[in-house]
Image: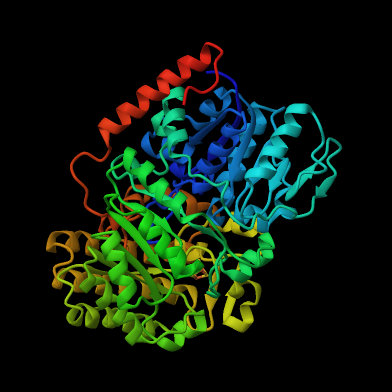
Length: 583
Ligand code: SF4
């Protein structure tokens, strides 16, 4: 294994999850990850592409995926054998608070001289606390860390202290902590590329496909994603990525956009690799309709499937423009509640007629599917309101005339309320009671026996018991509704119902244990239930595969990949002989 300048490591949310019995419940039912959040942030690929372009050799190791794929995979041994001058660890999503710090400890143990660099939203929010952990040397802050990281790598290479590197929190050799100014905040994202080609090159070079897999199921369902924007114009109370969150964490007052033509080029590159759907992250209308139309012009002729996000309702005209450029697009829209008062409190001020019109506009324009997302754990939302949301889903299915193309989902706001979100920053105003404030409190919470106990909040309208019970009941009812309307088969519905029933009874059993057994015995008793708990842990309130967009039997574009692979092999041979890049 040759020496790498920077190895990016992605940890599972809880490092020793294979030895624990945790009832994770539905916390990851509506995202591609398993409950240990095995998906690494898109930023890993972008940073690799940027650093490689500037002459640094990088590598990605998705430890979470490797640990999930094999019980016998020895993560510590694997880390000990890595040959890298420095290590980068993501703490983007807060559920990685435990795993990321444990992996950093392993790196410190086996590579005591190698700098350990953290980055991501949660790392940024908690940078002052994070840097105090002995296994953390640097925290690169903000939503755009490509250039600060490059400059830090240069300093490390030259043995200089990074006193002038913007957005950096760091310790000097005497252990003194420095917080450099947040001076890097690009107003556009012209330098950002998702690096699909770099990924192919790296997989061939390192002969290691599994470590580069963005998440465990990706090898069977290679969904691709490209981003259009950093920042947001919206003010959703529970979102750390809202306008206020970005202002607090990155000092960003305006979103920064990528050129729509660059995004279209990403999609073309993605198509050369995968036959899976390409998700366009960020509502194309955030930068205005001119931006959206430039993208739709640039993407003409590229084959889907595409997944398009909407942050607010969609007019008939826009739905038709989308359908003309992206035939069979899949729409994703999150009104979060059927109750306009709950939605308004959340920061989404539109009427149910707008929701219904949006569904109608997209489906009648030709959308292949319309995924509709609702949440449990919101301001002003009671248990009865959450269950009425499920009834509203049935009403939509009866009236939308979608012929199975409208697919509603309901899931808990879990496990944590986003730091940096308005509700987190001012919980009383939004009716939240927080159980965790510090990074360490979140890290400890992840070791609780169930997702209900891990939840970092309660609301004035629902305590943790009610959130959990309502989630199971809502999931149970929606599952039956979906079967009635032919969205899922009776067989699938029966399997999901059985998982929900099992999860409910396990939750009751664990509650009983906690109430009656001394704390040191609870863990032992839980381990005795591990098999049952593990079987109730994925696809609890809906089957994760309901989110999948059907593909052909061959998930990858084999011919194009072979061509790409040959050109990369040629390029590597060319450079090994002392030349620059051949292409
Ligand atoms: S949840 Fe709201 S604030 Fe957050 S990214 Fe989406 S639209 Fe923006």
